[in-house]
Length: 387
Image (cartoon, rainbow, N blue to C red; front, side, top):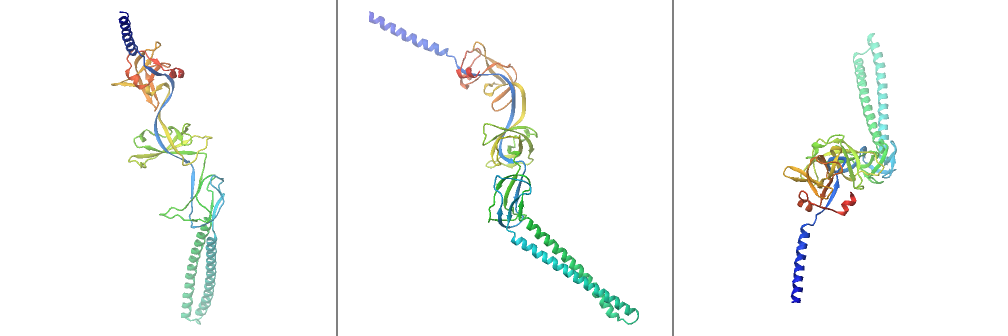
């Protein structure tokens, strides 16, 4: 009998335990994270990628072909306008100048010779005319002298044209000699030096770009050249603000302003889509930046200033309405319909329905999806610490 009672009590205890667990399981409160509604600025933005370039830069290319005799500078060096950067071997250019000077001098001598001949013909013609006037001259001799005089005048004109040609050739030769010495076109930084002593540079022509020698740039102003997708370009306007994230500073953005918007679409590399070039001038900074760095940008297309905002994951949708779960003082939740404004990737502006300081459930997603009006929740410890 005693054994039967013990067995009965054990079974009853087991059943009670199961029922207790079921009851406690049904009443288990979901654990959630919360955030406070706060005042602040929020910007709707467009994402783009690109590269950094100098706002002002000059690419030096050769206008003459020749061998590099001396390079006086190194990449990264600061230079002033007019400083000599490099020099080609000038032997051939100097010889060309000397040859053209000799031709010009020879032409001058020929002109003087022709002028003296003209003076002699003029004198002979005058004497022949005097004889002819008194009946002693020969008419044929007079006419021959007159013809020789006229030919001498034509010869002088021809020599003068040859002189002009020789003078032009000398100017070209001198210009080529001058272009064999390369000077800094502006004060700035030598961003690149792509030539070495002993190498041969090629002059640019109509269909051929000359050898790239050096790039002189003003490092005080940096541009971000961005590729903006054609679907977003209509939202880009001049003077819009942008945050630029350079590869070297991925978590510390630079600020800038849109100064130029391309008017023609280009094919994006590796994509079928089209993009427009947008230039953003970066604000002055003490951090070191280099042309060619890859970057990404957030261009603010609209800004809500000093408005209510909360993390975007708090926003819930049902049919055509937008709502959030607000945490009450007794840790119960209430469903509040809200009117939203602009949003960024992480924040949502609220225009109606909430007040500053309200506590809003922001996650996790699974517990939020099961919430009902009046449910009691448990706020996660990490969320409490943040608040």
